[in-house]
Structures are given as structure tokens and as C-alpha cells.
Image 1 (cartoon, rainbow, N blue to C red):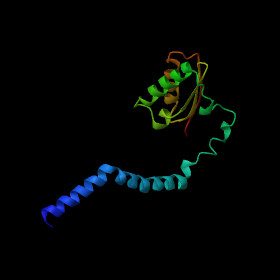
Image 2: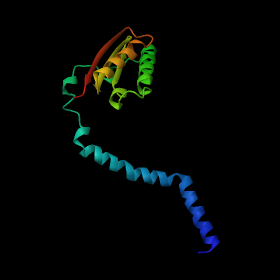
Image 3: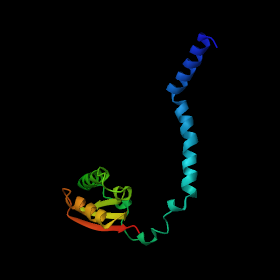
Image 4: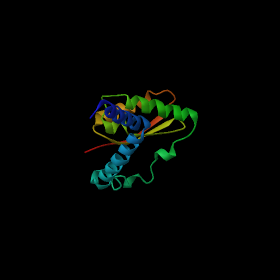
Length: 137
């Protein structure tokens, strides 16, 4: 191949990459594959595990009061920024209503459960913490 043809091929390739179509096509291929895995993975469906949660608070019960939203953001930031916590612990549900923090979800150990409660209690504006965290096992 001569140099001018190589230049044209490189130019077309660069144009495709820069246009974003390549990445759009790549994501269109990758996303269905990940959805298929989640749909077939029995561990991804925790419906039965959460059957007891029908009367408990959910993230939909989160108050939109600015003070409560500030508390949620502070607790969530503290948890996700703590590299000593497991992924489960970093992803527990944090619901705040009138300064009362409800913590829900599974963690790997009693130590994590206690640590998360301490973090929530130390957050400014928190009046009470309801620790409904469960320990996996």
C-alpha cells in the first residue's frame, strides 16, 4: 500500500473514532451482554431475600427537605469514601426523614455494621439512627 492510501485510511479511522459512532456501536454491543448476564445470574435476583421489607422504609421514602438531603449526601460520601468498607457496606440504603437516619441492607461483618452506625451518628444534623443493617451469612 502506498503512503497516500495509508493516510486516507488513518484519516477515516480517526474521523470514526472522533465522531463517537465507534463508541456508540461498542456500547450497543456491550450493554445487552451485561444485561443478559444479570438476567441469567440467580444471585442478581434478591426478590425473595427482600420479601420481609414490605413495611420498612425504602429510598422512595427519602425526604426532599434540604437539611435531610444534606445529611444523606454526607453519610453516603463518608461511606463510599471509606476504602476499608466492603462494597456491600458502601452500598447500604441511607434514608433520612426529619433528621432520623435509617440504615438498611446487608454488610459482611458486625464490625462494618457498627462502623456505619458510628459514621451516621457523627454526621451533623442527625437526631437519631435506626440501624436495620443485616449481616450476610
